[in-house]
Image (cartoon, rainbow over all chains, first blue to last red; front, side, top):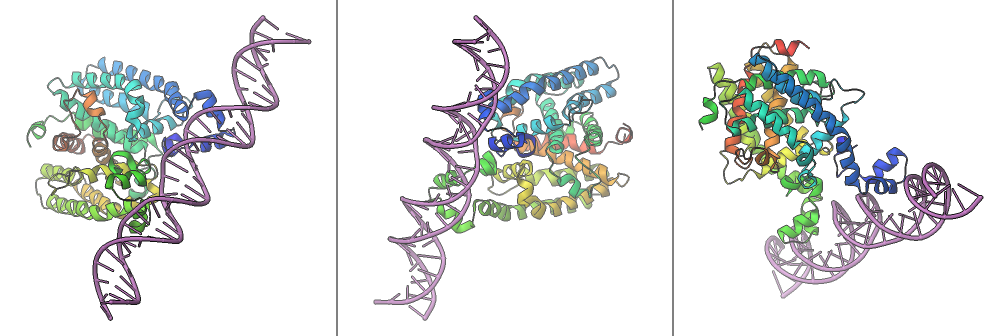
Length: 198
Length: 198
DNA sequence: ATAGCACTTGAACATCTGTTCAAGTTTTTT
DNA sequence: AAAAAACTTGAACAGATGTTCAAGTGCTAT
């Protein structure tokens, strides 16, 4: 429910009735609604982080430069889309995207605590792939990747509507392949004249 | 306020006290809080649409293929970032990004009504640039562009934090240049082997 | 001048929010 | 078996939400 409706729109009572328990249980076991919310992240985010770390190690050990860039991109995307993931339906990916795009998320600090560290690893890996890039360029590249991933995760049907069903955000594997291809190619761009001119 | 906090978190009373008027005025003049919200889009979205249409016409008249792709990308990005825009501080761009990422937006149908038509024009322009692409590929490319743009518009300071201030979402012009470069390069990728394999 | 209309205002309304409380029930410890 | 701790429950709480209402004010056309 957090993934579908976001933190604010998901009320304690909706959660409770959906679970078939009294509302008071949320506050007893998790202290507050935000406590329950944080518990979700505390349980699931280590797995994402570990998958990213492994993905980056794999990329670092790849000698071929082209393949290496692709592996870095996939280290970001694959864990988020819940691919190669045991028994999870990708719901946590949706929650993650919602939290990242939630205006009130900065106040909770969940990303700062749990995802900024691995984000910095991603940035380092990118910087290693593109030694001639500035810190700013590396960061814009990272945000571009993140945004492309996010919009698919939070889609509510617009993608299927605009594409007449030929593109479907409910099929994360296909989505991941296409987005990874575009991002990989985008990162490899050598024509950096565009980024320095106005 | 809608741009900063989103639709739900922006309360009628906050709006009213910020404007120095009684709350009841919102309902008198706009019928409801959503009425006021829609009024913002009804006022501002035509300008965005027109800028996009002009941008796409410009792209269509460009003979050089490389430049043409870049113009299509910029037709999407430039109006959103509020560049070359008279007296507007880009607040509407933030509202737009919030609405696109809001879980409850599909219920309001604002994008369906006001932005799907121009989105389809964008898709057509993309399809014209890449005649060998499938409809799905064109759509994934479009969503990638949209997502990259969005994450910058809704940023609450994470970009500056991760980049130690070297990348700043408050500087939309620089952001636009970097993102446009990556996306343009990403779209031009000829190595479509990646999108057809697993 | 005066009637009519648009507009403004502050208070009230019903509803929903997250949370707390006191009273129970179950489980664990001694 | 008795005591203690952990857990469950339904009701209640204070506060905030969008909206409505009746009474007032200001402007405009006749």
